[in-house]
Amino acid sequence: MALAFQPSLLTEKDASRKETSSVEFLSKPCDIAALAERAKPLLADFAATAGPRFFLASITPSLWIPRVVVIQRGALIEGIVYTKERKLAGLRTGMLFGHSTLGTLVVASPGQREAVLEQALTALLASKRTSGIRLLVPPQGFEMAVSERVVQRSKASRRQIEFSHRTDSDHQVVPLQASYESFLNTLSYKARRNMRYYRRRYEAAGHHYVGRMDLAEFRRIAYRLLDRSVVGGKPEGVTRALGMFSEADRPILAGLRRADGQWVAILGGWYEGDNPVVLFQMNNDRDYSAESLSAVLRAYFIEDLIAHGCRQVFFWAGVSGPVARGAQPYPSSTVSLDAGTRRWRALRRLCMLLAPHLPRRIQWAVDWIASSSGEPCIPKLPEPA
Image 1 (tube, rainbow, N blue to C red):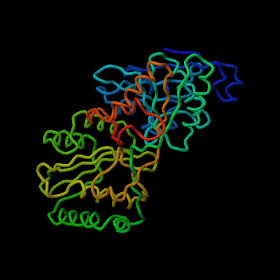
Image 2: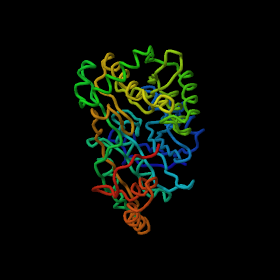
Image 3: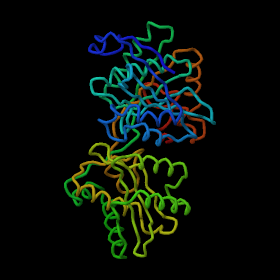
Image 4: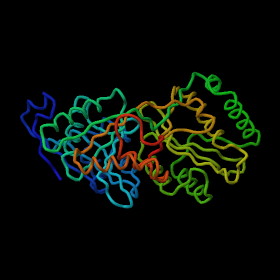
């Protein structure tokens, strides 16, 4: 589907061309995958994690429908905006989500990012199939200002948009020091003691840490651990993570291997610029519950990062265990853009009333629909991938 937009929505430089641009919506995985070739000139300046194949790999089909917006002028693709539509009970909801903190929301040249996002949001909100949009954005990012402009423009149309935002945080960042010992000293006494004790015991038994792994071997180990019903082992999550790692140009693949050759824990992620992002970890605590494998693996991993000059590491959706003592919320804001219809307002009010009384597994979704300025209706819950 393509829509024509007038130059008034573009930068002054673009407007001077006296050309119109088109907006194309893509939802079929085959069409989104083909975008990698179509947008090759644009994507050449970005890491693979900004590409459509990485975005597709990040989508869990049972929960989300990909919604990609392509901004094009003639044969030239000027920008891409990645969003996804939430499904509940297998049905589409009209609620879209875009991630602009540790994930890519807008792919465009620096001078075009605001115009591209503005066109994309305007087009999405003009669709009767869109009830609302939630964007997780940096507090000082351009996305907030663009969202406000889109709302102001909507006041001149029949489909007015309601705007709100609130402080939020889905991820955590762990600052790293110049040495591993200095990092340990930032933790609590108990966390520091556990990190040292379990690692020394692991080493004394002749076991090993492997900081670089082949993806094929990592995949084989992941599915073997999945068969053991280990911590962190869910089929959809494993498939999603492996798909993302296979598309990243700088994946992080590390693990713990016992002296007898058996793999007992793995950790995966990728580099976003110079920053490591950890998405995934599996530990065979079922068979080795007394070895604190998670703490041992993270101890080695963090020491390795420090040795390579990293000064922070991001944990997607947060981190637990001893390392959590040194973690800080990664600041972000949730921007809410909602159709101003009576029916949608009534549904959001109902969700606000029901959220605290619903099962925990669906509270996050209801609160997400009811999202407004101020505090969430319920305590912060992780959003399913």
